[in-house]
Image (cartoon, rainbow, N blue to C red; front, side, top):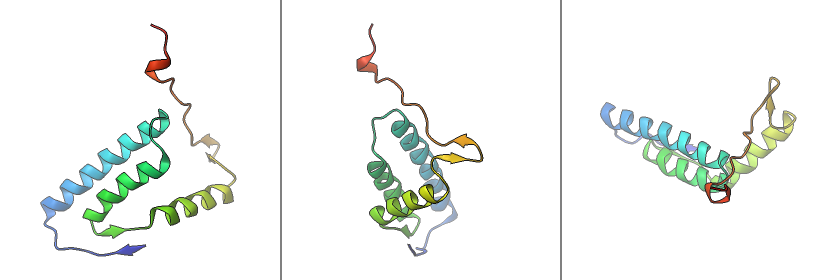
Length: 95
């Protein structure tokens, strides 16, 4: 992980931070719906964090996240599942 702090105004930082929050939420929903891969979602998030001066290798981050998940026993945190049930795609629903 490499962090650089470019010259940003408070307005720039607030704008990018708000956009990062929205992009992250949308990416998480699309992954839960089964229409976006984890790698693509992380690429989208990485493009936003770069604007805030934070860069990371997507593949290294995915490997680290998988290792951390396995180390704590899977996709459960304090008894709560961390994965959502995939939603049936609209095209598969009978009308």
